[in-house]
Length: 330
Image 1 (cartoon, helix red, strand yellow):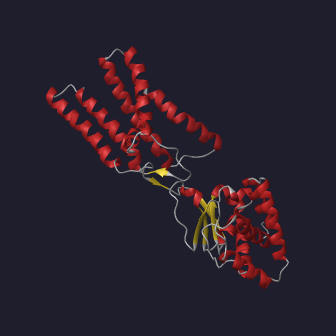
Image 2 (cartoon, rainbow, N blue to C red):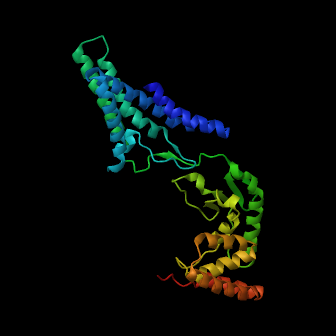
């Protein structure tokens, strides 16, 4: 049983790693090792039940009951039962469970398994073995509960565990290394776009670093004026990362600008920075129904008129657009 459970745990990721030519890191082994330990503990529990109940009955009942109990912890509150059972959400990109997160289910299952094995020792008084076994099992269960009692739905994680590549300066851009081939051009175009927008009076943004926030998984870290964290993993190879930075650099005074005002500012900035193609791609991704197409015609007419104005008047227009945008209406 232990060999089969370990095979289920290790064979699929081993095949995947072999196909991709990737070596596992120590962090990536944390959960598989914990799962292997938990499977041994469950096997000990199954063996103990099999000693008292006929195996032909115990095996299918325990297999189903074990699965149901662990799966059911996803449907209950508070959250600690799912954490001590070993039930995990899908792990996000760049996320690694902290050692305590992997240790909690091992503590619960391992404590119970250790207690059962103490009962089987052929030495010492039976009453003493029972007392020690109960104490060990109870300590493991209580320790797991106390550790996980205050955790939220997401257990303790570390984020950003991804090999990064950086390029350039003012701003320095950093992305996961599998996107590094696109990075030099994206960084140069980003720096140029921000210079153009600053010269046009559309922004004062001068980020020192722009880094890919996708590597933070669910533990999103906030941006600052000098360090921008943006979702760049897909936009970089797709070709609209620079446009995303352009949009980020335009700060509307109101919380939500109306559609026509917002898209007029974005299209104007995209045209000034050579990102009009990326703007159009984004609009098509959002979907253009008849109403949206009509608004888009108005936006293009507005921007065409503004682009024909002298530079000083364009600067005045974009500042006025950002500062006096109308609140979005339903």
